[in-house]
Length: 223
Image (cartoon, rainbow, N blue to C red; front, side):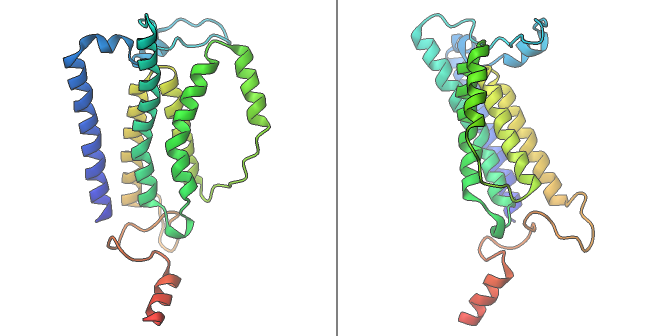
């Protein structure tokens, strides 16, 4: 089954990522001090500084250009690493008739863009208002085909925000929780009722073949 292979693929991906992070920390322990991690702790323990107070991103230990460059690269790469398996889930569960390749690209690229934006506007109210004005002037005409698609977009934004404030670990946890929870709901068809069509592709069938009965009928007639 496709779902089983996807679950194995996701599990292997997250385990390999965890092992890689552990090896990097063991080989060079100081790297932990200036990587974009620990932002969750800062959010949960930092004192409230008023309505306009901003969280402190995890860059207090950066002391030179090389470390700052590594921080930026790791933050953006971390958002990509966390978003990539989310795109696998979307590609697996989406019905072929409603499949949107541009949404796949959006899921992967949006977190990196949001990460960069958060770093730029951090601690700058003027830049934040400028960004809001720029975003308001851009019109997006691509309507989502399902409320479920909005979940992928919201998660992509959340991953980017987490990585931008130096909480890559939160971005990865969000990715893990979403993928496994979404797949469990999809496999079990939770909330479904008899006679009501699923809003996503059915969890059945071999790797090859069309999800659209009209395409299958056309193929048979051509044969």
